Image (cartoon, rainbow, N blue to C red; front, top):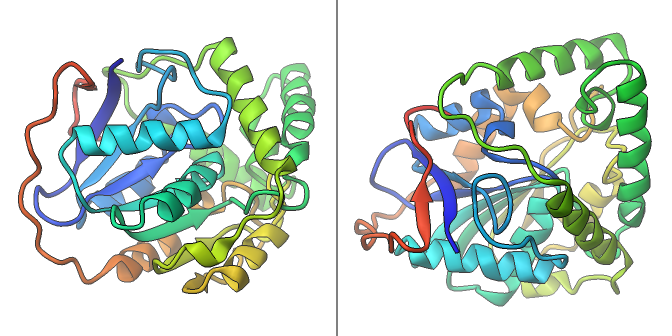
Amino acid sequence: MTFAYRQLGPDDGVPLILLNHLSGVLDNWDPRVVDGLAARRPVITFDNRGVGASSGSTPDTIEAMARDTVLFIRTLGYNAVDLLGLSMGGFIAQVIAAEEPDLVRKLILAGTGPAGGPGIDKVTSVTVQDMLKATLRRKDPKHYLFFTRTEGGQRAAREFLARLKERTDDRDKAISVSSFRAQLKAVKRWGRQAPSDLSRIHQPVLVANGESDRMVPSVNTIDLAARLPRGELVPLYPDAGHGGIFQNHDLFVPRALEFLEPQPAVGRPLAPDPHLVRPAPGNASA
């Protein structure tokens, strides 16, 4: 099994590992967010098992995805990281923080919610409905899934989708249908689980979202921040949805960098095992 990844930013400091949303690959991260964070932090984006250019079969549980993420981190040689989890990536980040407390220093959870959170089990139906609507209107589904239907929201969607096309070389592979289906099963299971025991997560956590998230209803964001022992809520972004941190990258990036300070010095990581990780070519830009 190999993991495709990109590493940006300085060599020193606690690395920030980005955990992607449902169906997301390397090229679905907003360059303004990745490059903005990498201006001051080592940032690593990667494809989990079976996704994009990574090999293997995609798991259909969040817990298995979390175990694969830990394998990826440890294979790179890190013993302490920060996590930024978006949507499904936020589910994965919660599991890792609870199960591997010594590995995770700080977390940022965006557009996400706890296991059993209201509306999370409806992600599949919302996604399928909006994908069909987008197909009929010849639009990218993120117009509806990630952004509000207002004039401002749709303008933000167009700007975001244009930014995703800025990288023209060494682009990642799109997610396969089988991997997408496995992820949908994992998300539905997460939404139907018993409520999470968030008291197990003792790390500082910054929680962010738009005020009108249709995929993972924004009430979950407020609930997360209230139930996490060291949770801190960023005021919900107005006229923004699931892609709130992308739409408001100019506000989110400096707030995230502030939260992640100070950075204790760490040694350079051990050399990655070439049999388990494979850098995506052209790591200079997200």
